[in-house]
Length: 363
Image 1 (cartoon, one colour):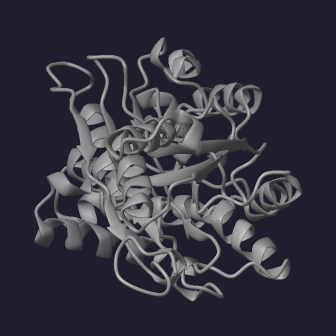
Image 2: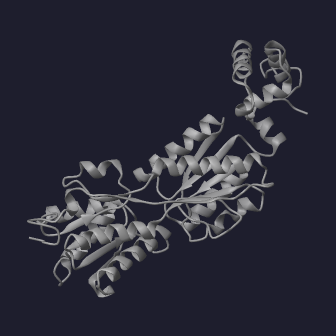
Image 3: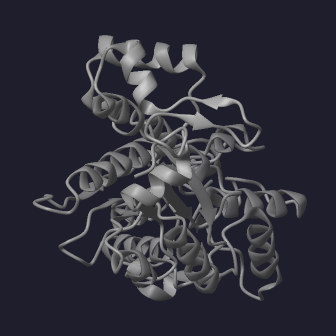
């Protein structure tokens, strides 16, 4: 059986003939068992702080270098987890990844970060690569509605937690935000502020987030006594600012007057819409109110500070990672799967405030 650091239980020599250090030497220096050294390397939270510090000091003093490939082959998996998101360029996922990495680091894991770029084919390919890397578990924001592409991992016994997406499976963990409620909050506020016609600008309909936010907006219309005809729908190919600019150009080219308000499926789209409207001489919010979703950092710094629906993004990443690592530690036996659902929060700024008077007066 090989040993981390050398490939031999008692040490040996490197490729250049220099003596190498194994777990047994580290254990002897620290005055602990080889199993304790292994726990420090793989599951440090299980070792008392003083003991862990003694082992870590011995590792530094002896120049021990962990043989990651050997330990991976022995354990059948690595001390890494995978994180697959929809779009690495979206600041929402940057903040989410920070929460994931903070928990993973605390638990002695590294994170392999990948993006599907909202492509089902790319998601399948990247998940296969993660399976080949023998990751311990995967956090996935799926392109499709059910996360079925992750079956390549589940079939190998690799836990998968859906992130920013509720799961349709009772035997799987998920952490998400109630986007139907978020869409209702956003559209409801625009209608409360006097809008009687809306536009909803969304990314690809295959994305669950876009579909749920649309559903919430329709609920708000119904509650206001308005029919579906009061909401125009504009679908764009990607959830980014360029797509938002394209959507604004389409609205400006329409024979109908601009809607009273525009609700966008995320802040990047909303920022693109706002920029194009302002370039065309449209006043925000006097002529058209705008609402985004996610409340990314750039929203408050926009030319007209953007109203948005805030999600607890960092907490999403932290809690999803905690659930994943709990399932990994339980090796799937007796693990109580949880489906965590957060509630969104409305953040009102200048882009949606009614102009020229009290609530309900569009000026």
